Image (tube, rainbow, N blue to C red; front, side, top):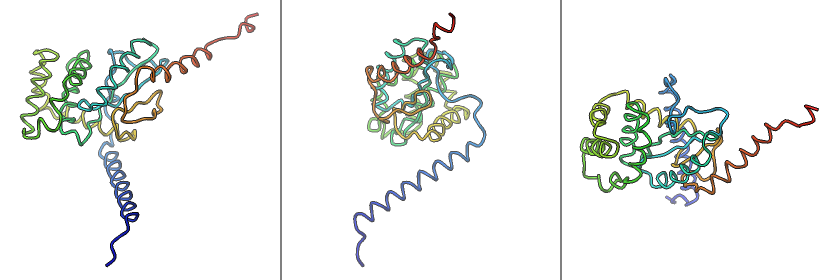
Length: 238
């Protein structure tokens, strides 16, 4: 029997991947038939989104190196633009990062306990995320990994969070919150981290960090355009 040609095998793989994505997306949509009680995501600096501001949505994985590298320039841009830019961070725990889901769940637990500590914990994960890469934890049980995450998080944001973290991992509602984040990413077509949306439109280069100059190139023209729209011709008052 003649073996299939390489081109045919390649086409088959593409078809199988497309079907898998379809069924995953479809199952996510059906299983989350009821909208969540609140919009997914963490609001930077506890500021509600200002609809008059430029809105950035960032999709991060706490143990993704590219997400880690993308955060400092984005934070610098936020500090530069102040109230003109709002940020919402969504979590996408990538399936090939063994501890992405548990670290994402820890962030949801802390955000529910005290939202002002959420980004402190995110930065703490970014700072020492190697602790939760696949290789260092491959021989640990899930229970042992969760205990290590609780201990690590408490060291970063304060021992007063230990109890909330421990009980949070036993609370089904925090599991649901983390699942909603994953499903939300799927509904937006996000498959890699970091991924950025600006005013609802995705930026090119999903899966790669954007440096500070890159953010300036994206945001400066938008602010300039908004400024032009607000200008009122003087002759209207003459």
